[in-house]
Length: 252
Image 1 (cartoon, one colour):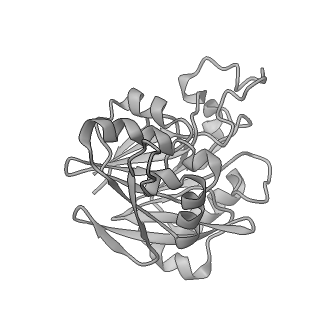
Image 2 (tube, helix red, strand yellow; image 1 turned 120 degrees about the horizontal axis):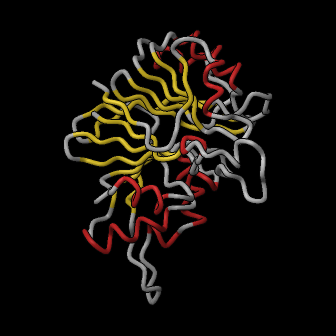
């Protein structure tokens, strides 16, 4: 299984519009961050985690020929507003793509993007996604997908574990009931927003503390703001590093 970081940035992306700070002005391509999302390639299948605002750009960059399923973490705009970019895949393959999320997330998506899920006479739109509510582990293309409930400030989100890999974006806490779902990880990709604290996200310090509690062999911090230069990864402890767009991993 191959895991690809499609986007490693926070909701504004980096560079942030109007900003000329050292990170937004950086020449390091690893400081150019589209909105956070992930691609999982397994057995000739492509599984998206979220449809970020930058989905079209990310799909073109990676040469993505099709999408076979979508896992949604939550319904915040930067994670779902690229949903309409799935239309291009439908034009080519004429397939309705299965998607999976919590009931709260799917209810919100259906309110915002009803045409994505249901046919409306005279609209000219064809449904693109077939929704399934998930809370327990489920099988997808021969792999077990484990939803992991997370705290995201005053709201909630889902992380996902597949094998010894887990993706925990947009979280400020991991409930005690979720800890057993995250034991024995080889690779953890997790929210590490910025150096300074934030009420709805782990910052770098609290993300490192959470990763140590989980005991992951390798931790990659994503959903990064323009407070974070990739070069500052030298400040991180052994086994922890920053994500960048296009970063990939081979996972058992």
